[in-house]
Image (cartoon, rainbow, N blue to C red):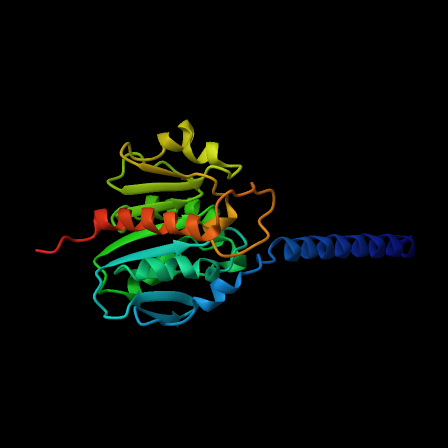
Amino acid sequence: MARLHRPRRRTVGIVLLAVVAILAAGWFWYTQPQPLLPEATASLASTPEVTFTQVDGRLEWAPADGAYDTGLIVYPGGKVPAAGYGPTAQAIAAQGYLVVITPMPFNLAVFGIGAADGVIAAHPEVTTWAMAGHSLGGSMAAQYIADHPDAIDGMAFWASYPATDLSARDLQVTSIYGTNDPGAARMSGPEARAKLPPDTVFVPIEGGNHEQMGWYTGQPSDGQPTIERAEQQRQVVDATVAMLEQIAPQAP
């Protein structure tokens, strides 16, 4: 009788292996990163105004004169490599701020919520920290802030919304989204507003979409933009810098 069961066990084993292989292939396909635009790669360099460095995988831009006391930690959107926000970071750093983009395991911030810990520990010269995050990255940055109530003073949501209640936090918040983003109503609607401080600043970018919050391509099911990416990015940078100006220590 034992011999009769061996083929059955072998068949079950083959089926299980096939299921595992299919799941692995599906996961590999799902986590493939979005392609970067040339501007993203070009931003991974120093300029006369901004010094670029790469430390422990983190991408860091700082004012070339070294005169900064406020930093911004950026969590990328789902399946978007950290460099996809390089031009944005470079432009913000040129206005006097340290900007650090943290790469995420599998390019999914849900697996790297605590990534800001290493950034803060590596930069004791920064006295005031803010965070920004695109899409999934924004929601996970909000979760980090909820878990570290004394570490972060400002938050910029880039086409995102909070995954947790921040409404009672003493936090300077700006929510920036494109009006042609399919998720715009959720980003600016009552549910999102109820989880944010009452003085949260909402910045709709007319004609902007989801993908143009970064410098990558291939965003599925996105709305068609009616403005150029450079213009949408200009508004993202301006609104984020305005938030940073609110929390930066004031010169005597």
